[in-house]
Image 1 (cartoon, rainbow, N blue to C red):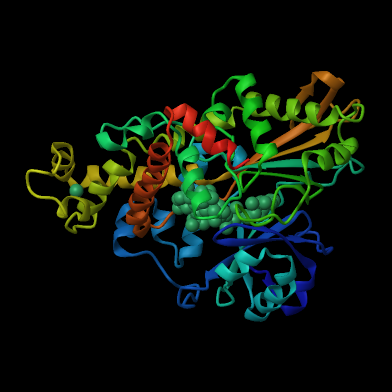
Image 2 (cartoon, helix red, strand yellow):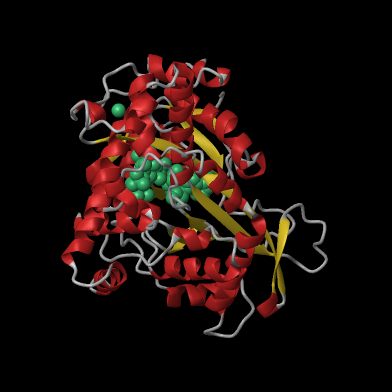
Length: 453
Ligand SMILES: O=P(O)(O)O[C@@H]1[C@@H](OP(=O)(O)O)[C@H](OP(=O)(O)O)[C@H](O)[C@H](OP(=O)(O)O)[C@H]1OP(=O)(O)O
Ligand SMILES: Nc1ncnc2c1ncn2[C@@H]1O[C@H](COP(=O)(O)OP(=O)(O)OP(=O)(O)O)[C@@H](O)[C@H]1O
Ligand SMILES: [Zn+2]
């Protein structure tokens, strides 16, 4: 970690986007080792004490939880541990070809303060209100820009990339789901969460995206999912042309920062897809469908998501065993009201509770990460390209493509109670919406959806 970014370097970094926890900047300077890289810097939430100094470390329970991963528990700071987590826990599960844990670089406080000033006008207002650059951090993560192909022999070709945040791709099957929450077995969390987000005015309308389609392994259903994402991207879909955002918002769900529509994308696609006006978008979706299908990355992701095989309704009891605290779920109930299943979980040996919680947190990373699919046209005679290729039948074109997972963050153990509470809120928002309607579940859902489109 020899490189130190100083105040004078800040001008070379431009705003690329952000999520809840990080801001990402793209490099525009000429230093060869930085060209084609992005810098991921952490934010400090406005409503929390601004206490981070780069040396905060794991709690004693987290040290125990991740004890099998020496690199993690020996990390001197949480930031280094986060990077080690992507490298040593997640990469073997998702495949090293698609995971880039990045390297940490030192940043001065003046660099971060200058960045904070420079990017302010580009950030969505609601993200500014929620958090600012954490100027007390001493390092940031340098990662390859996965929305671009490195410039090489095909210098003239533009890169078009698509970022997808697929969210949870299966219906939970755990026997620990309470009878009153049985709706979770037949309705995706994404769909139910849309209703809560809509009520909380985080989204202007409900998405028709169904994660089960995207993960289905069927080309027709993948295509349906991608169409829905394109029509209502929220924070689940973005398209970039040579790193510039052309569809979707910079900052996530509540963000309307680009008004770009599928029609605008149609125009830009002329640099990539050799089809007549009005037909390019269709071909582009065909290209994306084909790539999602053939790359197999969603199958890998689904396997990791399914490490959550107890559901939060089971994992929460294991969590209280693990932290040796009275269970706040069972604690509020009379002795004869505690379910036999919860009693069974509370009798598990410590190592089994640990495994359940650890797998739950790994699965949570996999339910929140995003994928970047990046394409460029393959030139005639370019068969020696080291990239995978995909054939687009409708235009008879061949593309190089690469796929990377981004945002493979370690979720804090202390978030377990939040997960349990949020799950309850999501289910009740959805069931209330159903009960308030007159028709069957399907009728009402249709009504609810139509009223917001
Ligand atoms: O709980 P969820 O499913 O709403 O996921 C959160 C995301 O919300 P969304 O994808 O919009 O539903 C949320 O994304 P947004 O802020 O809504 O863009 C974050 O990704 C959050 O993770 P973290 O706090 O940054 O580690 C995510 O929290 P985790 O559950 O992954 O910890
Ligand atoms: N390696 C990368 N290459 C190109 N773009 C990237 C890269 N990493 C992140 N980005 C862009 O920056 C945005 C924010 O990054 P990221 O998802 O890591 O933030 P986050 O705060 O961790 O998100 P979340 O809210 O999901 O926790 C992404 O949505 C993506 O558009
Ligand atoms: Zn309990």
